[in-house]
Image 1 (tube, rainbow, N blue to C red):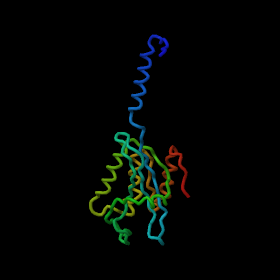
Image 2: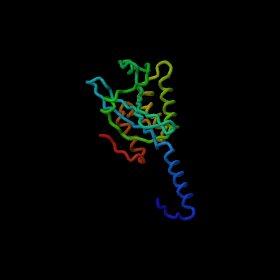
Image 3: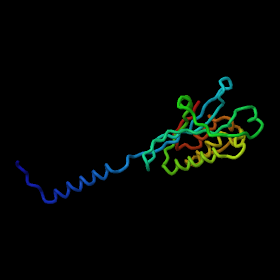
Image 4: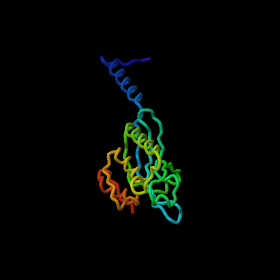
Length: 185
């Protein structure tokens, strides 16, 4: 077999390039989790009232674990009692079919640390003592607002929007122009 003469240092260069390639392939794949802010228009005729919730999708950087979750805050039983004061609450997880029929207002990519902070917040709301849901002061909008603050959004709670999740998320869109999101009709 015929061999070609090598320049001095070629073996070291090839070894260095191979080591660099191996190091790059050994790094974990780039991953991220995205928080999607959703609303449902609701209907008095079909039994679902207006609602807002968050959807988390993606992959955790640290572990590669796939994330596919959603959380909303609601009254445990939707009865006329919610109109007269606080009632028992729960965190609601929606079926994919329902999520697909809702409005996605905007999305924010978050690091793992923020994902875990959101999960802590969900647990806090899930474990509220007594009657945690209050239509005026602690409803789905307030829950999503708490998540929005964790991801760095500017939020407000205008009294006239506290029963209008879609309009409230549109206000958040306007108050956070860096999202480059459009308002939902």
